[in-house]
Image (cartoon, rainbow, N blue to C red; front, side):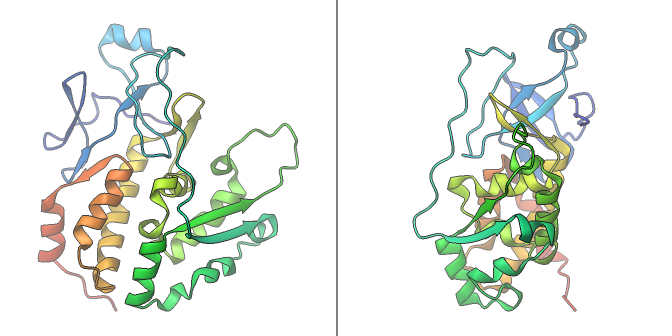
Length: 253
């Protein structure tokens, strides 16, 4: 996985900080709220003053700053339990292999959702139960590392691209959903370590989609909700982004 280094993240408008030193990132409408962990040959890169970084995100929404790989450093906390009463989408191995999206209809007809139904989804939130049997008993991959499962989520996201906003964020469902679609690595200490550029593009794309969807559903604060979603993945959205969207609307066919 290609990792972006500080020398390549050149935008002067957006920055994050490591030990109070600014590191610029690429989009003029995103600000990093998350911290970084270092990968690769740290000592060699430190000698050059050019350290490759990757975004480290724990599904609970907690972030960690680590300049070494010391096992004595604080580990990220586990995610919170599922929200009580949330809507559950259950999928199994047969459903995954056949790319069957019918289980999604258990939470409602998402293809023609009404504002009232949208409010219900946002209030109750949505989660996934994945029942997948590994053929190899020594297969220790996470669900997000199994191609068949990721492909099912790719198809799901193609049909319901606004779904991330109604997921059970506090229980880590948004992070797990992102892991199905964004290149990443799994760290025993840090949890999910996303490719930073991939995650940035994912957040921006979802911001456009979710903001528009929330407005269609007559949500009272679409901008705030969209910003909250981005913040859960470690990003802040600039007000200018929403100004541009409002000033240049697109009429859906």
